[in-house]
Length: 318
Image 1 (cartoon, helix red, strand yellow):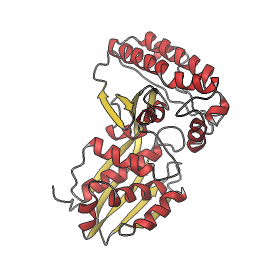
Image 2 (cartoon, one colour; image 1 turned 60 degrees about the vertical axis):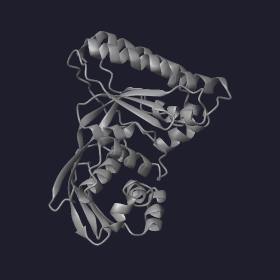
Image 3 (cartoon, one colour; image 1 turned 90 degrees about the vertical axis):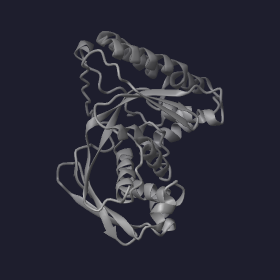
Image 4 (cartoon, helix red, strand yellow; image 1 turned 90 degrees about the horizontal axis):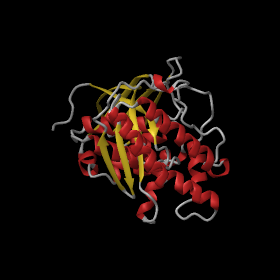
């Protein structure tokens, strides 16, 4: 299709991982170590996210304005040179405020299947993120949402006609350019709010299956416990246990993110399909108990790591 010639309104949601946290990262090791179980998780997009207007700009640059979500309406601006991959990579690897934007741009203009089309165009892209309702650093994939927003903006500005899976892949490879070596789960925010999906991570292969059968209304309360979370520290801690376990603690982590996680996720999908709210609550209780048993602080690297913080006191209210 032709590149957009007018302003386009975009929205990218955050995401809540309902079950299977970090199994995306662990399942990625199957490419080198087939004995590791495939990762599986259930995610759903939030109604909070990034609101933006996208248009073509003069010159081969990305111009972006970002609005903070802390309520003060503060805005920041950046200009990134799309014809200078070295500068984009340097900005991405620095790990600063604009690193995820720069990382996604770098992937698109260097190694993506769309690189030739983007590089041959004489124009750039402007992204005005005029409203942000998604909290940052709360485990809701705010970083992945930024990467998906950039990928989607390129699709509109350059007429790339990207599918949702294409956007996810560009966002994932863009974020991997930054110090945050994430798994493939977070980019499922690209599917939008209120749409649960089942993701399976088998090495470099990702399968996406919409959870179409929902037998009852499920209301999840996501609570901010004012805890700290350092994704880089968590993933560095995980690195000690993979790809091959060398201690009993490592073996427990492999079991937790492997066959135990697969069983929990399968049970949760069945409960959701049957509208068995109490059964779903039991799955969460069992999954939390397994997490408490096997996820030692010295493995995960952060005492305040986000756990299943949306548990309700009365599981029947879900």
